[in-house]
Length: 293
Figure (cartoon, rainbow, N blue to C red):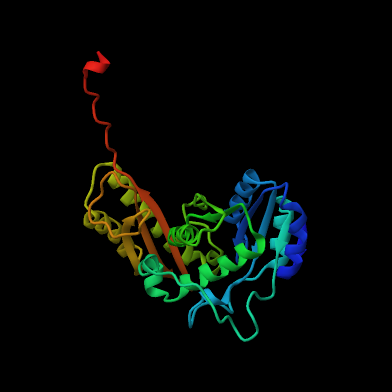
């Protein structure tokens, strides 16, 4: 595995390979866990070359957020990447000029809800850094986790709107054995916090099961989840149901894909999770026509 510390260095290393090999890219902020390793494994299935970046992007952290405290474990991360067959590890000190970036990207309607509502500017920082990384690496594929579904949706839209020649691949949420969605911020949790945090996946699972049982009212589904949060003494930042593709608010479930979303602070960690909501709709019976007789 080769480690590059600057954009120019990585470009030089990748340039002779582009004409005859495909590249898959996994952007991370480090502190890698099994969820990241799943992304890397998927990248290896998609392309000849796997590039992983480790960069704690200051543009996506707001005032008072955990930029300085965000866990940085490069030596362990590098060993994990090497063991997983990563070809290139990109570990820049910074991706911005010393005076700060003068031109950035801005997410619009898709960023006005869920995490974007409470973290203004967060997704502007995300798409700005992802755009920079795409320009440096020029991947054929980029793999993102579905745990941050809103981020995945916004990046897909960025690629579509800006005509970027990269295919965005979503990878399923990887959970701990008890159901908690894996996150680098889980290490902030005490044992008591961890037990309390299980309410997130439990509440979403209850919503999912109720939908499969035929409940179509989002209000009822949210009430079911809220009772679980109340029992666990968790105050959510948001609990919402939205269309999977457009992120528009949903009040009734139908055949269109929908997902339940939650964010909550547990101890010192801000955690997010989401799950698909599907109705158990039986297929319409076939009708007899003259052509079928």
